[in-house]
Structure formats: structure tokens, C-alpha cells
View (tube, rainbow, N blue to C red):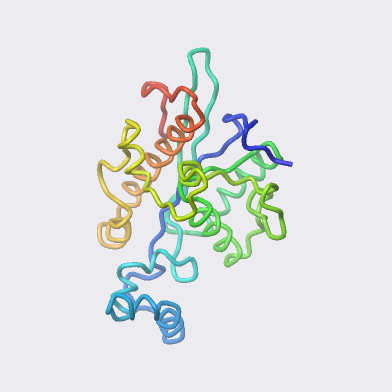
Length: 242
């Protein structure tokens, strides 16, 4: 049985993903896919008064069925004599399958026991299922930590800093930007935001900029996790992004 109260932070892989619509605009979808998107988002269209084309432009990258991952940022803590150090890197590019294969290879090699965990901010509702669904789309075997079908809640190795902050309030949604500001954690939101990712990817064609933004989110998530656990955060000079 997993126990969140006895976790070794050095065995936690912190992650964040950046996603975009599968194609730049709604009109580039084939007829069948366009209809299925319109059907899936009908409630949002009615609620917002927007056509399917507008909803796709705003939220096409939110749905795993109609989007793709362009970056998975990961970070790991290491205990040092003076506290913690943190190393963050990313798998990014235009080839989603390649990104997923490199990421799952890391999990299969280094994060594959009941002592290992994945941690993200809103990871349970977004990052973890997104990665798993896209692995299935590409026919990639799910690593142990993502293969959670049929498991009991206490058997799943997912940590979520947003859920940790909620303290049981299931209606709670608090952004990473707000929590880092509130708790005095250096903010990752100093360049682009999630709303800019599709534009930066398709119009600016700058996936490196997206990767830098993603790694900053990973660092912020790891720092937030340490703060929520009552641990000393990583000193800025002990953070490495590669």
C-alpha cells in the first residue's frame, strides 16, 4: 500500500506537459473529426455562444482526442548536505510519438517501483491522463506508474500539488501561478502562459521557448511540493535546467 506521508521526495518525478491542437485551425480537420469535435464541445458552444471553430481555437489543445503533446518537462530532487538540489529537463519537439517514447523509457528505467511517484499541479485531472491517452493512441505500452486501470485509489502513484493545497475541498481549483505568488515561490509565469502555447508553436514555431516555459513550471511544482510538505525549498543556485 502506498503512503503519501512516508514519501522520499528523491523518488518523485515532477512533471508538466504542454499541449496544442492537433492541427493549427478547425478548417484543417477532416470532415469526420470536425463533426466529432463539434459534438463533444456542443455544451461549451451553447454556454459560450461560440461556434465550434472558435471553441477549437480556444480549447482545441485541452482535449487529448483532438490535440497533441509538444513538451513533457520533468524534474528530480536530490538530497545534498545543504538541503535539496533540483535538475529539470524536457522532451519536446514536433513528433509526439518520439516525445512519449523517450518519456516512457525514462519511467520504465528509473521510476517503476511502488516507491516511485509522479507529481504535477492538477496532474490527476490533466497531465497524467493526457499522457496515458496519447500513449494508447500511439500504441505505446503504458509504464507501471501510468497503468492505473482497475487500481484502488491508494494504489495509484499520483501526487497532485493542487489537491494537496485543497485539503479535502473538492471544489477547489487554484492555479500554480496563484500559489507560487501567495507562497513566495519564484514564478514560472515570466514569459508566456498556457494560453500562448499554441500560438508560439504554430505561428512562431518556437518549441524551445515552450520547453523553457515548461521546465520553469516543473521547478515551481517541485518547490511547491516541498513547501506543502514542510521541507526547505531548493536554493536558486541549486536548480539546474538543461
